[in-house]
Length: 233
Image (cartoon, rainbow, N blue to C red; front, side, top):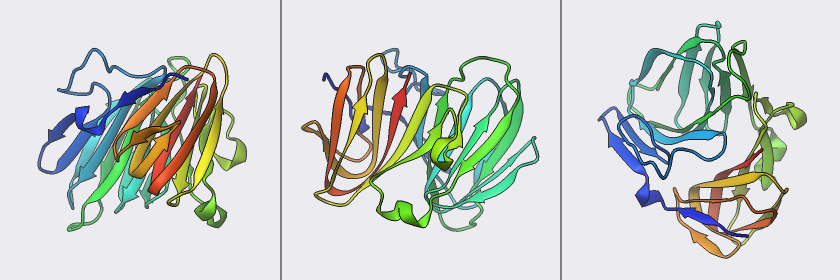
């Protein structure tokens, strides 16, 4: 399998004081024609939000947007009437559809919060806006690869309007897990913390690898790993 490597230090970076953000793909003032997305995956931003700060109410449309909290907490409110405070390891998924407004804030006045914010294009425009969440269960603490988002909501995953399966990967040092990629699909593996190899390719925190070749991907941790794996049609 041919793997394409995206190094952490090559990502776009913007520090606004209240927000420190790394952009895997072109976003806002960061533009790189070589990194406009991968299949339906359009945005992966790794954000740190200062205490008491956040994104005020703003609109979205025709995008599947999810946040994965790394540490701290994230308060979400939207025009569909949802109001939640998400904690580490939890995921919220908002389907903006034909139009929605929302805000996201760090509810702590003093402590920073960190999250991955990810945008995936929907299978079609003009869908009815919707909201769903995924919360880890106790048995997931020791599960290497957990399905957190899928188009059919199977295995209690959050539901997305796209042919996209998203897995949370957690491995202790020396542990491995595999993933079989079918023909015609693409995989993107985003390492959040720890160090790992993917089919022998070494990754540091913030690095990513992708492939559109069918076969088996083997993820091996050399230090405790947390990552997201996207299997995209």
